[in-house]
Image (cartoon, rainbow, N blue to C red; front, side, top):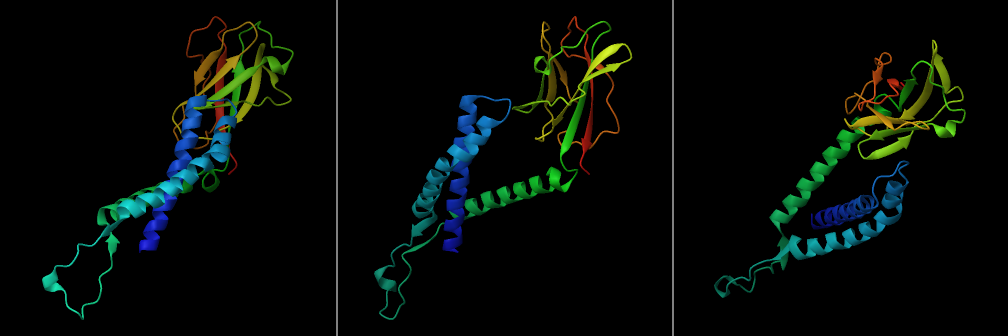
Length: 238
């Protein structure tokens, strides 16, 4: 039992140090659009915090997880009495470690069963923008900036080869992006040359199902003279 509790304490310390240092780096650096800072913080800098946390977990186990037994009184000592162990496990420390382990285990299981690989597969958000009548599209796709925001993450939407489209006499833009997070906060923004950036909320639950079709057309959340409209559809691998 001592070995198991010491191992759990070390593992919990490593996890805490790893994630805390990575989160601190991301918080100080601020959100980035492609997730490179978060990846670097987790895989390159996080292990340093993991080593420190592992050492701290072992130290906490030795310092607080083991307590010394009270010395026996002379009246109770007998020559034939077996020597008592010098230390024993601390019940409050053991209960705390086991409780934290149970919570993390439940959370990991909960996220596993909700992961895209066990439900719908990878989710693709198809986005279409419809420009007002008479408004033209840029000739270069580099002039079209479409950003999908999920929680604190940002991703640039992909433009296919046929990204220049039309709906009757109105020009349109076709794009797509992959959803990577479970969150209720999602939005998409569009930036075109000579126009202010416009943003639309994506009304989906935190763990969405595929949508049967495109949502209704809607204008940007902030009024703009451009009156560009957007609608979306969510599909899955399975």
